Length: 111
Length: 114
Image 1 (tube, chains in turn red, cyan):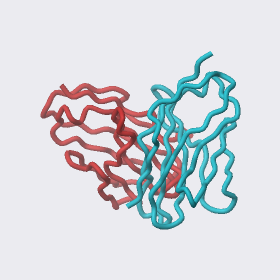
Image 2 (cartoon, rainbow over the protein chains, first blue to last red):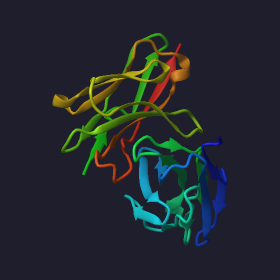
Image 3 (cartoon, chains in turn cyan, red):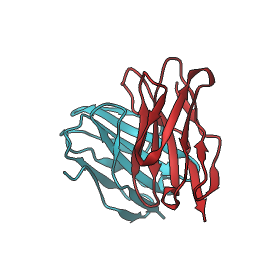
């Protein structure tokens, strides 16, 4: 039981490049979320999903896309990376909306 | 909309001393409240949660928190801090309907000195 896994752990992008951050969970959780963490800002919700095929926007969705084709996977796509998207990204999953289990994070730098 | 305030950005305590981290929330109904801990370079781990019932809740690693509705607070406490408790602590509130994920405070960084 690996819990929540995220790949890659580190990534450097140039402005304008696109990429996908991967998130997978093996706990059969319905709820999955993406957060970004910036110094002094805490965790801010980007997108979330309440089940396969259902996604919704959080507090800071601009510049990011998500889809949820399976229960296990919830990838986050950066469409055209900007320096403001330099951050640490956390994926979380839960059997309820509240008791979230977090992945180890992806540290993204956009130059 | 619900919100969470953690008034202290950084706290330093001596090893063996007691600890209290403050959390205030804004929410129209009885909230679901959580404390998470994040060790350096790690993801977040759930310390404890309050849904209903007894207002003093026990968590892992010797932590406890008390829900005070009159003060809209959910402060985290530990009677004797260990050096390994140095980390960042996040308070979070959840909507009782369960339709949206948690809203987090900005965090309090705890340093422990000998």
